[in-house]
Length: 331
Image 1 (cartoon, rainbow, N blue to C red):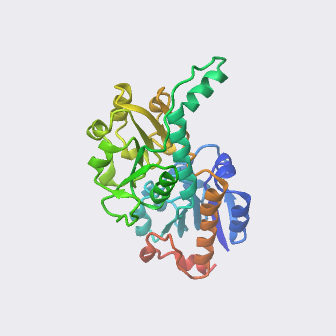
Image 2: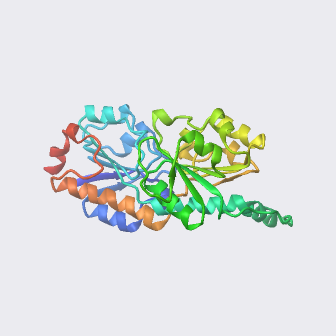
Image 3: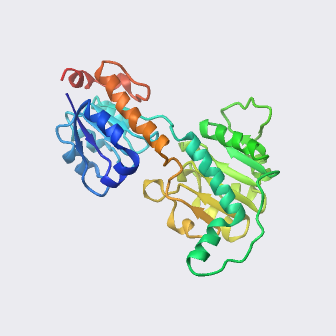
């Protein structure tokens, strides 16, 4: 029987790894829970997971090389998220540990967050709410309609496609910039990033976080944007030069901004940007809906079940180096 350590804190379990997934995990082996209120560092994680051959991890729990060196019985490190940038996959491979990640179950959730944020910024909803809750009467402010405006979507992945379809449903002109994907929908206009930034009233960043996209939205890019445009980041904070974004807001180049991600811990929006009067910020909740969360949690259960049956699940990152799997399966 597998011995499994679930790294989610009690608070994170409540939101990201529900009872149904936990019951499924327990059907596959002995499950040990993390009872600390903070994410575990490598040393604490190794101690807490001592003797376990499977770790099911949340996105905030890093897995550096020292973790794999300190866990001789570990055979599988599962990530209940897509992002594995804080996992040293090379070190895992060197120790024969399989790394897996979950697929995107949050496509609809994030796309809907994007439009909720766009409407909020366009109509000043959050500002009015803050005033009313503080005992002030907010002044009526002229808003902007999404219909008839131009939305520019950077990145034509699964979420990008959904955002484009919603943009069309709102009656928007939709531009797409993606150097890899091909846009076949005649209702959309594929263009260069330069042209998109110059023409879009709303710029939505949905590109992947890669070395090549680090600080992709820098001072030059923000200066290319249409005056009075709105910037939305629902991807990763790594794509944005935050000092440049702050300058664009302070200078009046941008009319507003919505952020669900940033460079604060656990990919949260950075406090300095989040408190800016032109920014609507949320604490990385774009994918925090029951269907989205359950999808990824249950996928980790399905992956482990497949491994125990002798298969190799979709989401395996380094299957060719997983030399410790046999010991797990023989239990």
